Image 1: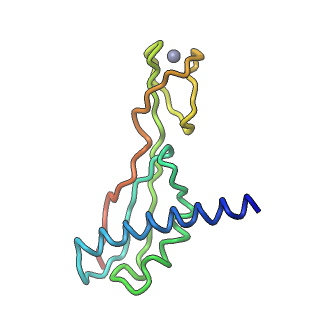
Image 2 (image 1 turned 90 degrees about the horizontal axis):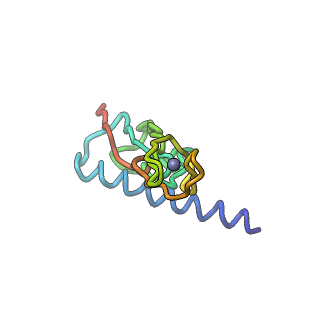
Length: 120
Ligand SMILES: [Zn+2]
């Protein structure tokens, strides 16, 4: 029960994000048919790429983006340790530096942006 509610909440979250991506493109290119939208999603952004793909068709129905394809570029998370200065890739917000410190600054991986729109 808890699991099912969590999954539904996750989809509501991704549907809202997908709708704002679609709205941003439709606003910039009113009435222009779109073939493909490429979006960069950081692995620390909390956005589930599969859920975005799942929601895209629904969110584009009846808009100038109907039938367009969604490409997702997944960008890695990157952390920097404030204790030892090391930089490393991470896919987890609660990450530890290899030195054992939890005092880690996130340098990248929170991105969520439209990189490219390909027109028909
Ligand atoms: Zn460290």
